[in-house]
Length: 111
Image (cartoon, rainbow, N blue to C red; front, top):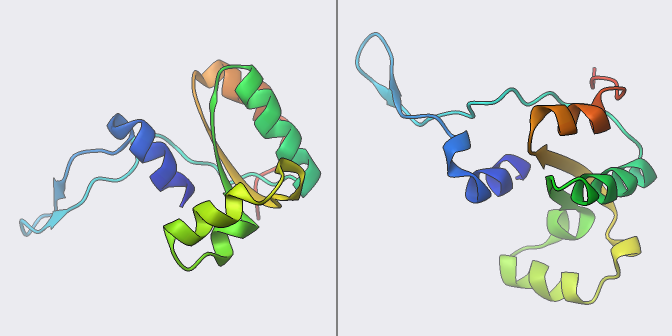
């Protein structure tokens, strides 16, 4: 979900179709590495705030989005949920490498 959010905002993140050795075509993948890091829920909120303050795009996945059956249902639920109650479960950051690393460099990889 997070990759789709970033891809919608920055379509150049998705590579071109690629063919295998038999000529079968495959949709493009992300052109950037996407490390999966770990951080607790309160830390995610702080990370999103810091990222936005630094001018980075912060795509978020919330418990509300995870439970929604439709996009309209998600939008309606989101409008009735305070920022504090969103329950972030994932974040994807996009922007200059240096700024992203400044915020995420000390986070451990998910194992």
